[in-house]
Image (cartoon, rainbow, N blue to C red; front, side, top):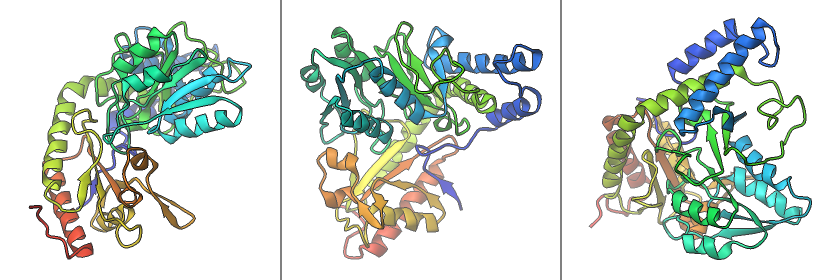
Length: 389
């Protein structure tokens, strides 16, 4: 039995996206910037995908969608695109639980003299809006807060945070890579200026992403070149993967009303069963949470015999794919920075695991995974009872 439960890492490309990519590769392979028929066929494909991706987040103007190579580039374009507008370093704000595409980019800006405030989060991983309000300064030019955290599943109060930021005349960006296609997003109602998306998180191909740029917001491009993508992302567009992204986005929007409640039901079923396993602590916010996301940490992880990585390897041997939060650098396991930022001990932060569900996940998959996880933990920690009292 093979059970894939790592949909937050990547999703399998859906057949509809593959079909349109094959058509583009064989029939619409021209350069979209060329004026002849071959080029214009390709340009039509790109513009159709732009409309489809815009529809996923209810962006009225398709031109507000700038295609990139993925979520990481979209995040970088948002952060650096704003920063490069200023000749003198300014101040920006992020949360302490951002994806590395944000946190590492901001670290680079700090080296160049920018001031950065990292907002703390509570034990559930949520930012306090009052902390954001207090952190805003006269020279704050950008706030970037992740929409749904990939490791612990917590969804931030983006609408509330955005209102605060907008009332101070500051630009607001959110990394919505994990949330798009799983939660309804309406940029006409949501007070955001910049929003990042990724194709391969919504059953599109890897290698495509997008940055929503609210009309009227200025950015400096990261790449010099031919001025494609409304001058913000030079380079010949990757037409096949953009086409696949567009189809995946359109289908995700259509399926949202039925797929999201199904995932929530499976997620809650998994949490209820996992609650019976001693030594496993749920992480993240149980209510403000991505619909497909289950995360736990091992109370007694030691980084050697017992860690999140250990559980990943053990479940992989049983044909089940999950992921861990702690990272291995030069052979040494490092605790998850996300769990540390939330106040967990280093020991617990070595034991984080993530189980993420998707279109192909069934109730039987969830139930079997819990059974296997119980067996693994019983073998690794035989002194613990299998049922909590």
